[in-house]
Image (cartoon, rainbow, N blue to C red; front, side, top):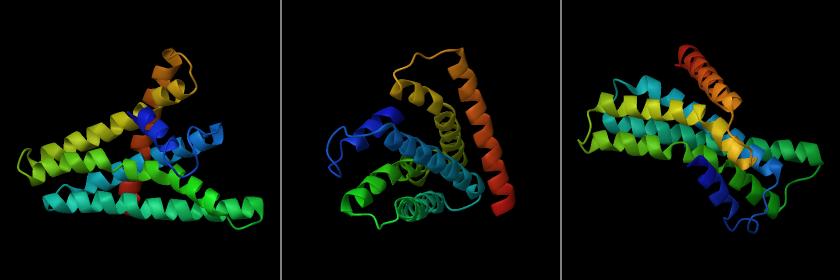
Length: 178
């Protein structure tokens, strides 16, 4: 699913069709991982809050991170290139930051099931958290597909390691930041 999303944003009308470089895809993968970790970290402490508040926290975390990431990338590019970004570069950076927003979509929809009474709030939260852990862990498969490489045992081990590292990062963020 993430690979399709990354390819979809490549076709958005910000800068032509199919013009992604490995650098662009790398930026999008980084934003996707970053957004997923932050959304997971935002999900964990909302256990005892009102159902719709959890959605607001997740969307707020994704939106503010998206804006901060976009701004930071523009500033970083200006430092690297020694000039202010033109319209095309601003749109390219915007497109490369979209995966951060994407990270909040499915967990928000899962939590919305609790708002509408289709799931118990705690069950919805657990499903959303599990979804995020699996999504983060499986990013190695997305990377292999983008590279047109075969999935190997190393890919599976990498998925487990990435998932473990993501859980440690989230644990630290929750312990130190909440």
